[in-house]
Length: 173
Image 1 (cartoon, rainbow, N blue to C red):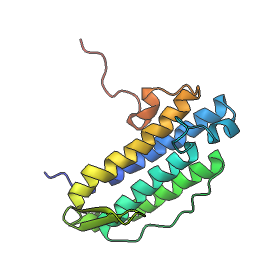
Image 2 (cartoon, rainbow, N blue to C red):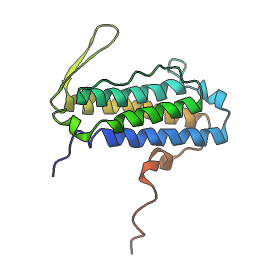
Image 3 (cartoon, rainbow, N blue to C red):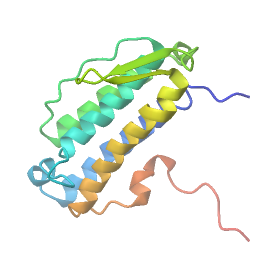
């Protein structure tokens, strides 16, 4: 049995975006939303909404590039937890709308990424996914988690991995 580029990307992105969505519910119960929307880890880093936006962009653009489809445009205008949760939902809906068969050949598809400076990278899909898309996605996921945690939201590792649900093994005897 082979492990596909679809299995290495879409489910991972969806699970983590759902986890991130859940963090906002916990944050809303514990802290002032307005304070968290401006929170950041360091002055030269972007605030919480940008971390959600960039995680969303990383996931939807990776799927689009791997499958040779157009990613939905999403303006980076979210200014509330409700809007950030909607952004997560729209990103998940896009990822889930792309049939697993569309990923066929994605590991060999050429991916070219250019930055505003004109520099960039060229990869095949497998190298892009494992060397850039997944690390970049998790940079923003982890930064969002860290911003909330540093602001005093009682998130823990079970929240970061809430998609696992409760343990499926009992105590060893």
